[in-house]
Image (cartoon, rainbow, N blue to C red; front, side, top):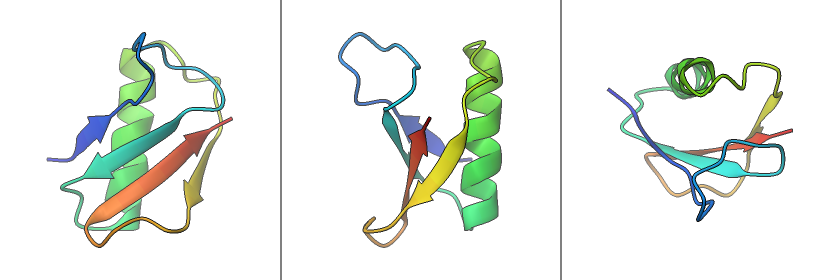
Length: 64
């Protein structure tokens, strides 16, 4: 199961935040995990994009 870290100090899920996903076995699993995270936080209208430069085993997903 993937773990999602939201770096926003308030914990808000909004455009401009980059979520860090760890524990996902693939890029697809990381994206699906973030989709579920957005549903849970009622933010499904936000777009997602995979960022470059993550460490091995991490995926960075920018919300827009």
